[in-house]
Length: 426
Ligand SMILES: *Cc1c(COP(=O)(O)O)cnc(C)c1O
Image (cartoon, rainbow, N blue to C red):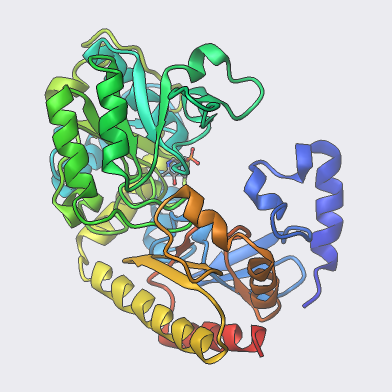
C-alpha cells in the first residue's frame, strides 16, 4: 500500500495543527509511521486519500456500531440541517431522544445532553460532588473518562493514596481530590474508602474497561463496588461512553445487572456526531441547574443535528435488538479465528473480549488491570499493527485500545481479517 498523499497531507497539517492532529492517539506515536488521511467511509470500510480500502476496526472509536454513513443517520442529519443548525432554544427532538434513552437504559429517570464524553464525565462528577457535598472521587488506574483535569491523574509517590497530575497544567490542588484504585481489586477500593471515610463523593469506572485494551470486570467486582458505595453513601458512576448502547440495549448496567447512580454516555449515542450525556434518578439529576444548585450548561448542547443523528441511531438499535446477538457472534468468530492462527504460529498472546469489544495483547499472562495491560504493549504489537495495515485492516494504533466491531462487517470481512493476521505472522 502507498500512503504518499497521506504523508503529504500530514506534513501540511503539522504546520498549522499541533502534531498534525486534533486528538493525540491519531498521530501513530506509539506504533510509528504517519497517520492515514481518510477520504470517505461506507459500511465497514474506510477509503483513504491514496485510494486504499481498509476494513475498519476502530469505527470512529466506537460510534459507528452499524457502520459508516449509515443511511438513516445520514438522512436524518440532512433533513434537520435544512431547517437550521442551532437555535439555543428548546426543540422537541431533545425530549424525543431523552425519552427513548430513558426507556432503553435501566435505573435512569432523566438525562442531560452535552457535546462529548469528556463533558459528560466532568459534569457527572461535579453533580456527584454537589449532591453529596463531598470533594474526593475514586477512579481506576488505566480507565479513561475524557481529558478534564480531575481525570488526568496518575499514581502519587510511595505512601500517599492521592494522585498527582499526569499532565502539566493540572494542578496539585485538583489532583489531591482524585484517589486512584486498581481495577478488579475490591480490597484496594475498600481500603481507600475506609481511609477517606465520609469524603468520597463518587467512584467512577468503565464497567468494562476499554481504554487499557479491553478488560472485563471480574465476577463480583461491580457488585462489590455497588455494596461499598451503599455502605459509604458514595455514588457509583458507570462511565458507559464506550459500553452504552454497544454491549446491550441498556449497556453494562443491563449486561451485569448492577445499578449505577449516574451513567455517562458518548460515542454510539451521537451516531457519529459530537454528543455526550449523563443520566440518573430524578432525585440526583434535579440537583442540576436550573432546578438545582449545580451549574452545567452548553451553547450547542442538544444541537438539532446531533440529536437527529443520535435519535436515528438509538431508534435503529431499539427496533432491531438482535443487533447485539449479531455483534456477539461476529466478534466471537473473529476471536476464534485469531486464536487459531496465533496458536498455530505459537505466538504468546492474550485475547480479552466482552461482546463487540475485543483486544489482543502480545503476552500470555492474564490481563486484568493497568499494570498487566502493559505486558502486551511491545514491539510485537507494532509489527501486528503495521502488518495488518499493509493487508488492508485498520486496528487502533495502540495496544491500550479496544477494537470496535461494527454490524456492517460480513463474515467475508472477518475471514479476510483472520487471513490478514495469518499473513502478518507467516
Ligand atoms: C471516549 C471516552 C471518553 C471521552 O469521550 P470524548 O467524547 O472523547 O470526550 C470518556 N470515557 C470513556 C470510557 C471513553 O471511552
